[in-house]
Length: 353
Image (cartoon, rainbow, N blue to C red):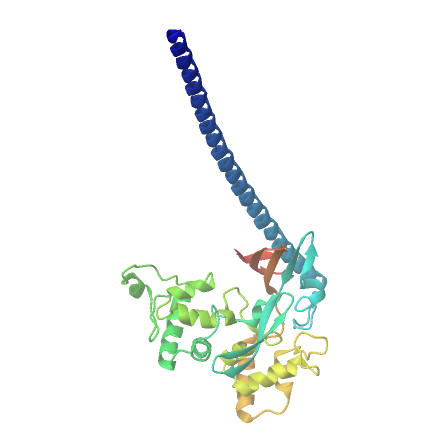
């Protein structure tokens, strides 16, 4: 009887041990499956978030692209053969260019016009909804050395001697000869640098190329970049240029302000129907009474053939946006277009952000 009892106890002990082992194994398996399920869920969530991000990115790209196409269509509908001015539809129209709804997003085409300089780095800007006239900037591929020097001194805040040297180096960079201007630089200088490169001896292709020119640095470039262009505008449009550009062309501050005030018309707001428009370069003399020095400054611009009243090159700054409850996704396309009424338009510059 004792033997049977002992065997029975051993049997139940082994049975309980096996059950405990099975329970332990089961718990381990459940733990592993739980970890696997959590990892799988996290991976799926990450992939879903990444896919959503790519979808939003693609969507805002096409929203911004639609703004570019819209801008070109408006240019085609409002082509003016006589002059190009801020009171035209393509230059300022909230109805056509401000937060246009498309599906669950919207697109805005806009730019800033600098209208005054209060000194001490204080600027007055007006936001306009539309396409920017690229001829409202100074083309450094064609501007004379004295205009570039004035631009660097007045807008770039560069001392006169250094401004003249950088201007000479800019002219040397863009001309096709190897003759060194006074204070300038040609290929010999650039080849002698720690990291040598070749002087282009040709026109600037993009504005950032200025940073390769002797004497230029990022700080100066950041100050002047909104006042310059390289896209074959040649002349400055006096109907669309801002304060800095007029000032860089050599006009006095007071004269710059008076020109902009005259352009704004009776309501004092740029880009409205009552704006005064210059139909010819000579109309710049019609802003009112001028001092002798002011007349001389205007006459110099006219006689130097540096100003115009018409453009065919435009800068489009198109921003596509999607807004959710807790986040916003945006994309931007900046491009420069040469609009040709009877020919295919040319894209001179294209940048996506």
